[in-house]
Image 1 (tube, rainbow, N blue to C red):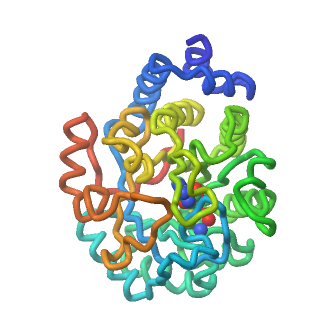
Image 2: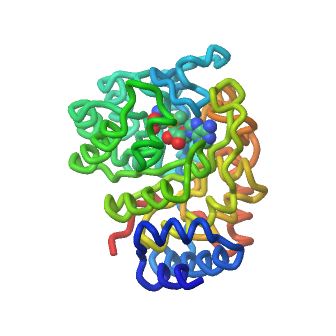
Image 3: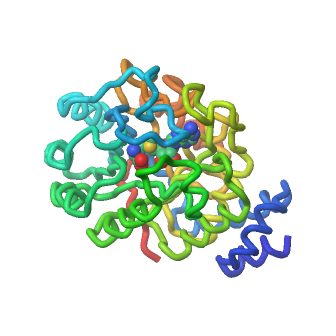
Length: 344
Ligand code: SAM
């Protein structure tokens, strides 16, 4: 508890201390940090929970990450790629449901920077009061610039792990930790609000590598951070690896909130998949964003990053009324707003 208390007071620990904190996690330290994280979040964001309409625009990917169900080598994955009109249709539906941020996520290399810029431009022209977040993987600085000039506001690019050795165990030759990091710094310099993040319990992850992730978050100071448990997918090389823990994910949400009090922190679909009421528990522990699914129902099952992904139920944008009720019942409120980061 000494380390948990120190984190709550100072908002940071040494790398060794983070590793200890993680290794020695107990229900008691989790509850303690969740209370502190919730408190500090309420001081900045009150009871507000921001929603983002997640549009999974394509599952075509040039990469072959060992953990991911839409990896290039997965021949069992039925591929799709939404058209600009389909994406605009999702936005229309989302706008009517109260969404003011659209997150376009997809496999890497499925669209050129010019195509993305064209789509972003159309969304921003139709919905000038909305923010557009991209989560489309690694591009060159010049390509990110084209997308930014078209109006993209934010970019989510999980760094996946801040431990170089670990990075190599999760990704094949040709993908590099250095390029992933280069992308994050380029995005920042181009004026995007930037999100990094990682999976909790990914194969070969240790308390030490998680401690490196936390140190990276301290140093990079992202606007957003997406974390969720690793969940195996049956057609990947990691099909028989154990899933990450929901409890550890929730614990780390609290830790990240305390490191960076104003961060935008989603309670992810993966958390809701491994744990009953996982997203609600995540919000209680310091998360303040939920990303319901706005993708066309016909394609939703095909964006299968991992097995048993919650789909067509309460995670979907169409069930926003139920989500609002749930949030109200646990003391929070979903708001219709762009939900930008509040500067301290
Ligand atoms: N291609 C983009 C990129 O690389 O950032 C965005 C899409 S990628 C599928 C989105 C995220 O899904 C990844 O950053 C990864 O952390 C997460 N993911 C992939 N496979 C997963 C799995 N088996 N379990 C949990 N999360 C997974």
